[in-house]
Image 1 (cartoon, rainbow, N blue to C red):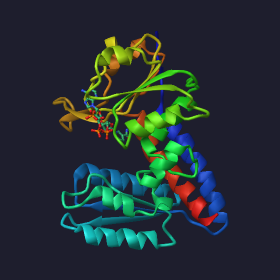
Image 2: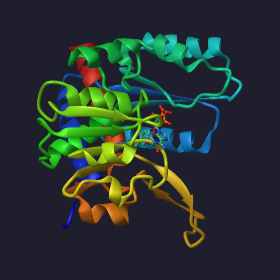
Image 3: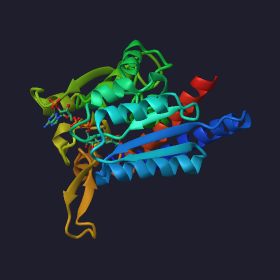
Image 4: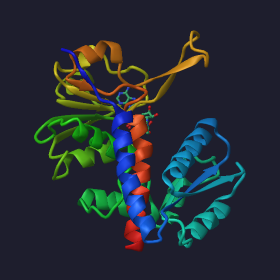
Length: 294
Ligand code: NDP
């Protein structure tokens, strides 16, 4: 079988174009969406992600505030920053780049963000809204991006057996909730697998749609995948590669070369889910702006 390559860059560009149209409508009303990204410390990967987010905002004409705080920032100081952003009428979306340094209680910081500005979708109120299928809430960007890829590529999700590999609050759990919800791009029969799942390979082989989000390089092998399955690879893993100038390369959670020939469709890494995450963040920021100002 020759698999369709699910092109995340293409889908992300489409989504960004939709955001652009909505931003133009807001601008015509004198409204500029604003996103504040808070980074505590200077973790290189986090710094890279924060810069990419700010760059995308600028490209789209979203007012972008990048707050880079020292690694020693205390919980109280960070709470004060969040409070100021909650009260700043030019800001409609707030996110605190994860992971923060050890002295920071991340759960308390997320809880302090105004849920109406929680464009990462991590606040309890937004988690509850996802469970309740209340569309005014914010859903974490990566699982939303995965669902959008399935929809863009016309993958039938209704009644499909979806296996979500991983149960994190950022990807696995919201992904499962999205796919089991009523509606377009959902209505699936969902199984969540994790590190304690028995007969994991057999569980994965039952998937019409397999969504892998475990952070283990090339973990999913050809034998774990049913012929004709659709595979969404969320993983971003660095593996040593002495031939590459950087000394490493990025691979997903799926052994692409051996799995792809069995699939109906599959996302590459990089160029699959990754570009969708940042595009969804822009979409959530526009949504927050419309809800706050509307
Ligand atoms: P977490 O580490 O928070 O969660 C990993 C999950 O995988 C856990 O539920 C864990 O199970 C499960 N798991 C780990 N090892 C195994 C195993 N051997 N067998 C079965 N299940 C296992 O990771 P995240 O959800 O944050 O991220 C997952 C991957 O997705 C990472 O590679 C990350 O870099 C990537 N990612 C990509 C994004 C993108 O934009 N493309 C955005 C966010 C993440 P248990 O709960 O039992 O420990």
